[in-house]
Length: 113
Image (cartoon, rainbow, N blue to C red; front, side, top):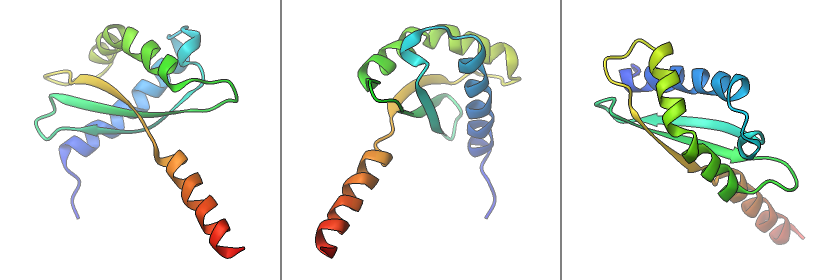
């Protein structure tokens, strides 16, 4: 199976965005996030970035607000680092995969006992 260009662009965006968040974003609301994936549209105009929050007192709503606040800065920095004709618009979404996995695991434990 061949990879689409949008998949390759998503991988580069994820790597570059993770480095950018670690190096240049100082907002304490986004310090406890983990980027889990990027889905880029086929026309490379829109990118949805998925994240999860780790830590005991971390709040996904605060992290999302911090990411939305920094979206313009993030997009301009990514545009300077990547050589794309168009920089995709960025939308952040909370990744529910971990919570869903924990729910399924607890259901399996309940069935087993």
